[in-house]
Amino acid sequence: MSPCQPRESNTSDPTGRSWCVPPLSRPIEGARRRRVMNGVVGLETPRSGLALPAPRMLEREPGRAFPRVRIGHVPLDMGRLSEVLQSIEGLVAGGQGGRIVTPDVEQVALAQEHVALRESLSTADLSLAGGEALVRAARVIGSPLPEERAGEEWLPAMAGLASARGWRVLVVAERPGVAEWTACVLRERYRLVAVGVAVPGVPADGRGPWVDRLLERMALTRPDLVLVSMATPKQELFCQYAAGRLNSAVLVGTGEALESLVNGRRVSRPRQVLASLVRWVRRSVAFLRVLLMARR
Image 1 (tube, helix red, strand yellow):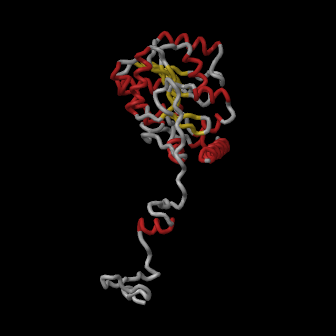
Image 2 (tube, rainbow, N blue to C red):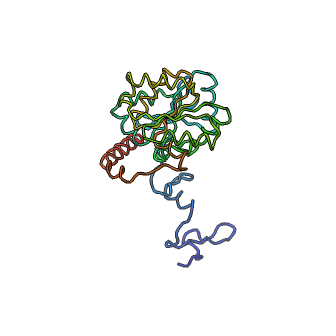
Image 3 (tube, rainbow, N blue to C red):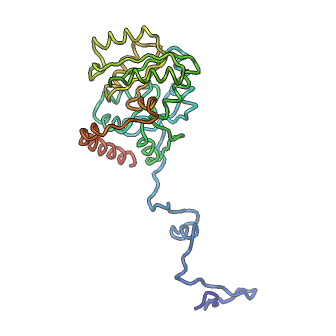
């Protein structure tokens, strides 16, 4: 039967026009095809062939500036850059200080079993995505972040705000040379009053007599913003402990992203990566497990 051959039954309507039957081999294209496949007008199958996850309910806690989405035990604030900077400015101007965490894959994996880390992340004033993996994870579970910004992308904006407001900045890092070099860059590039302090001896729990003496010396600089770079969970536990003693300062746990202020990007260390390959694989697998559970 040709494409325009009249149909056997009801070959014409009352006006005398013939019906044309499309050949069975001709594909039904575009949105029409997807509607036919579903059998319901307006219901379309995603191009990937996988059903998109339903949007997750956001957590809205009293007193918090932003709603939160939770990946495993790790919360992420749903704030845009301008809103986050305004919130940080409010913490500093109000004199009450606070804590900002930037969790990544490692924190998500460790928080499954590390109760103290879990508490430190949950009670922080702001929790910002520390890596692209968490930005993608939020999208996968159905709650994409308002802005796909992560890790080192937050720090230049914070430094710019500190420069505009004339804040005093203290840089604390356990890797030799990182604190001093970063403070130097902040002074030259952002015209900030910045001091670097190397702290290679902080205990794993982030507290103790040595830490108390360190915090006393840090308090003498009267910092408004404290950038902290340590291994996790030491970094988060130290910031939580220090926040109670540096009452008016806002502490930011930056991790290795702090080095991006010096180099423009996060520094990779092949030797360290090879040495910790097994640990990285285990934590990546743990992160994927958390992500799969979150999609259910």
